[in-house]
Image (tube, rainbow, N blue to C red; front, top):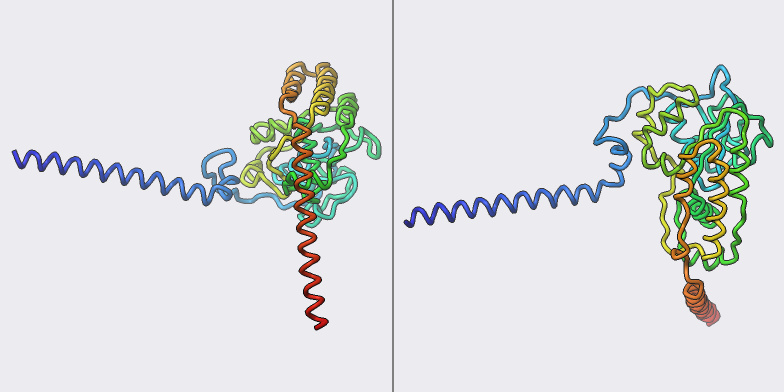
Length: 324
C-alpha cells in the first residue's frame, strides 16, 4: 500500500515537473521573441526564418535604357518604400522628380534622374508634366493614412518618425483639407499608356505576390525577389500609427466623398479595384471631438508657459550669481 502511494506521488511529482518545464520553456521562447522581434521582422517577412539570399544584385543604372516609367503617388503613400523593394529586387536604381538629400545619403543615387537608366521615376505630379512617360505604376493609399503619414513627414522632418498630440497643437491646428488627393488620382487614371495600379495596403499585407505582379508588369525577372523579401523595410517605411483621433467630422465626410469620386473613375478600369477603394471610407463616429482637443491644447499651452517661466527664472539666478 505504501509502495503504491509512493508511486502515485512520484508520478504526480514528475507530471508537475514536466508541466513546470514546459511552462518555463514557453516563457523563455516568449521572452526571446519579445527581445528579438524587431530583428526577426525582416527575416520572417514572408516565411519562417529564410536564409539570407546570396548574390543579390549590386545597384547600378540600366544598360540599355528601359521604358520611361512613372511611379506616381500622392505624398505619404509609400513611394519611397516601394522604390526600396524595386531596387532590392532588380539591382536597378529608381529615379525621382527632384532630389532629396535624405534619400541620396541612404543610397538612392537615382534622385533627380528622369530617363530610362532607372527602373521607375518617383513623381507626385500630374501625368506628363515634366516627363513624358511610356508606362506608369500608380500607387494608391487610403487618403486618411496618406494624410497622417504626410503630416508626420512635414512636422518631424523625417520619413520614419511618429509625431504626437503636442506637435499637432503647435504646428497643425490650422490644417485645411484639400481635394488634391482626388484630383491627383483622377488625373492619373486617365493615363493613356500601360498603367499598373498598386494598392499600398495590399503590398503591405502580401509583399511577395504583389511584388511579383509589379515585376511582371515591368518585364523583370523575379529571380532576386528574395533580396527584397529578406530586407523589406528600407529606410523610409513608417509603420502606421494613429495615436489619437486626427480627423474631424467635416474632414471625414469630405474625404469620403473624394474616395467615392475616385472609385467612380476607377470603376471604368476595374470594378473590383473600385470596390476596394470604397473600403477606405471612414465613419464620422471615428472623428475627434474638437472640444476635447481644444482642452488638451490649452492645457499643453499652460504647461509649456510654466516650463519656459521656470527656465527663465533658473537662467536669471545663474546671471545673478555671476554678478556676485
